[in-house]
Length: 112
Image 1 (tube, rainbow, N blue to C red):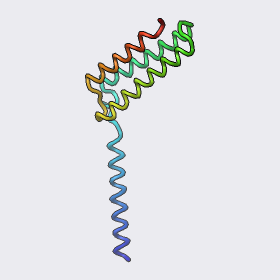
Image 2: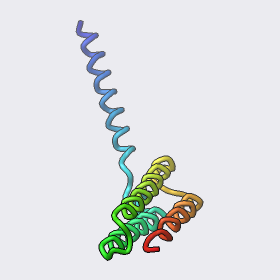
Image 3: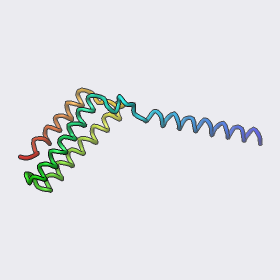
């Protein structure tokens, strides 16, 4: 009985260590969060969000148009997040170019 108790305790310790190691590996570093390519894409999305709100407030676009544009921007943001997660916290130059092309499409729709 004592051997079984010791083995259960050892298994519990090993399991808790593996959970702790896995949790710390998932936390992005400061550099990953502020990687220049990611920061540029996210900052541009934030500026576009403000432009959409301003155009809506000024009556240049309808509430429906603003909703559609915000939805497209959120989709681009989610795509950036997925790509960064898949690449260990970074996006490649090619992914950045693709995201910028998509942002250009949304930008061209604002205030037509």
